[in-house]
Length: 164
View 1 (cartoon, rainbow, N blue to C red):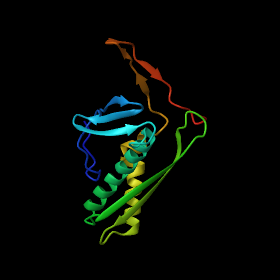
View 2 (view 1 turned 45 degrees about the horizontal axis):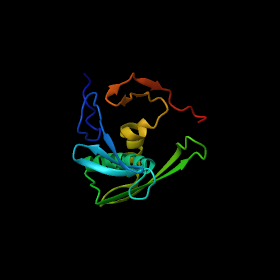
View 3 (view 1 turned 90 degrees about the horizontal axis):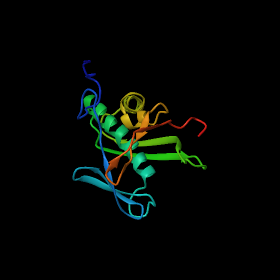
View 4 (view 1 turned 60 degrees about the vertical axis):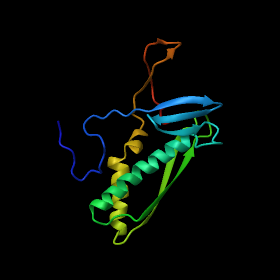
């Protein structure tokens, strides 16, 4: 087993972690999603809650921002305030997947140097942020259908090529 990188941002799991989430359909296109009692609403119509894509943007933004806060704290320049805004450009055709992301970090904190904040952002996006790395095209995805209590066979889907 390899030893964790002491410079890496703090994370609650070490080793080969497994993450889980559960989403339950409520009505229309509204779902309650999360883990245990820690849930949030996701709305496919983006009327009463963020849409799945908006939730994805929030996930990539908060994942990267978490790393930035942690890295700057380890440099003894703690963040006093941080806002991250994420803008996505999506394909016009279906699947309307995200093709481009722009993250804008607005950071306030005494003693934080621009160069070190930029380095923290770069480290997060290029090395530590699980969500950003998960948007890569080499992810293997499979699905299993349990219909009326009967479990089917797992089906592996090819991920989208760059042309999609």
